[in-house]
Image (cartoon, rainbow, N blue to C red; front, side, top):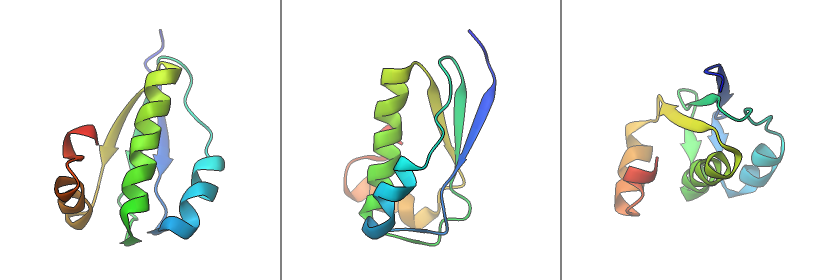
Length: 89
């Protein structure tokens, strides 16, 4: 099992209109890799951004890789808490 890190960056804008295209355009990590989800650029978002993170978590479980979210804006963390999703991301 490899311990390589694979970085996925959230875009500055991630709303419902962009979410599907962003997910479809990703190159996913290999089995055993750690995907660092860099959310430091995220500025304009709605609940679709959280849905993307949950989808990545689902894909990680299915694909045998792990995720770690870094740089998530406080507003996104609060939104995750409101929806009861904070522990998932």
